[in-house]
Length: 403
Length: 230
Image: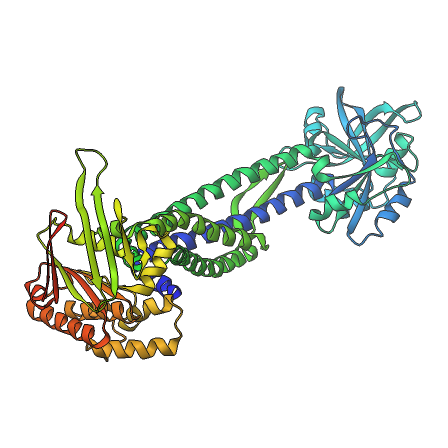
């Protein structure tokens, strides 16, 4: 009977129930859509960032990141790559050499970061060729003295494609390294990024230049799913105890912290929305219970126990939240499906963390539905507690005196 | 008729906490109600009729004194004990009917029986019997808003009586009814009193009830000033 009463009570003031339902359904759909878009956009940004530069896991000498040195290398790197690529989670591994050099061109000099890359692997891993806005990428097995320079360097040195550039540095054996390289490409995107002040060399050429035969400084591992980076890094062990695997969250800790801070800001927006929905529900339930004070007095006079009265009010809240959650689920499933297929296309690409995104696509995950469901139901329960307790404790004679 | 069903012993009820606001609504009231009586409390407004009914129903606790219903001291009961006791021993009829608007006539009448966990067949049988007794057969599925005031009060009577309470307490049951409907209602309650032996206590200003009551207790300034059995 209480079940029946709770359900019918919701239909007593149809307009009020409809308005509250609209608020709850709207709240559910908005939270679900926000989470799906946040998951989608974070996925896009992380994917773009890690796949353009860092990779998902990096293997290097254990303090190479903190104190880089030409001598802190990974020996027999091809064996390591073969070993790592046996794992099904791995898409590709890209070896890299890192150092610095003084560049000289047309009586101008500039200190730049030198990155030796395996042209074929780097193309598969980071698609560096797509960031070359002038010139061409290296040949797949390039061993020539070619260089792709960052766009800022090109500007500073007034260097152009086909011109020569001199690199002066020190080899790993202590010798002076200096040679002439032909500029074959200028790299960089419209936004500022790591490429701007870098010079890329073919790996074998860089190894020869720095006398690092068979050795590299870093293995950049690209996984099929970036979400598995932490676990993968934790489980990756080497016989050479000087080597360590770090997930992108540690390697790019500033970027990771920025993403987390953004996520926290987003959580605050969702919390404010939940608070608004909660206050709306509290208002509805409170209004609906206050205007029924006399009726509660009658129910108590007839022998209804306080806990039964409390259950009645709680049931009303639960019914309302379940119905709204079901409707909200249908709406958000449709909306999120549309946003995964079509996304929100920006009129201009937006720069984010050194990369750009031109559209926002939702990513459907269980979280996008589980959290709003739990939040709406829990918020309703919380909002129902006060009116429920208040009504169940009311004295019969006091309630019957209510008009 | 000799069994004492209600025993009110030296009950005093004081409202208000300060000397200025203090109202002595009942003053040392002593009263015994016997099973099967058809009793009316009469008196001017503020005489203490409703307060006495509230104390006897367990809606209010006395400031001093004791109230026994079927030898159970109700003023000492906890909230849940009192709810259960009211459910099983007292039926209520209110001045403004107080039916549950979201329940049909049938559901209103069977409400107390569902609280008592009486099975459905038994509930259906008794609802049918009492709705027939109050002349509302065929209106089981109507909602209170679809009934007249007199019909609503008849539903309230059926609701109050259907669970076979020891006593039915009615607070001015005819106050919102026209005289014809009021008379019909009182006649019906008298008939039920005689048919089922249910004890009725009224508070009233209604001369019809005063006329038809078998015992008339007059209150004034919180005290019983006369107790007349016809």
